[in-house]
Image (cartoon, rainbow, N blue to C red):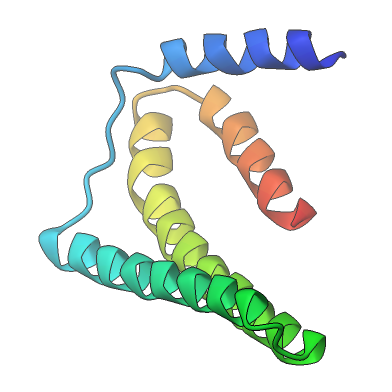
Length: 111
């Protein structure tokens, strides 16, 4: 499948899911936003390190820490998705959600 075909498939999938929403508690949302704000700061810090010609190994260490922080956010979202959205859809008789979930796992594992 080429880039254009992937893009059309992705846009179609987005339209199919346009009416779906996550249902995270305010506590979980606040936790995720706090983590993402910290990650945003880490990214700005990495940019500053590069602008200051910081030793490459030190920059790579910071990039690794940022990737780990993003993985933590993904794990929290994945757990909530499985325990909430996926279970709800299975209970509604929608077993296609399992294929969707497996694709999501595959996307995360590529990184």
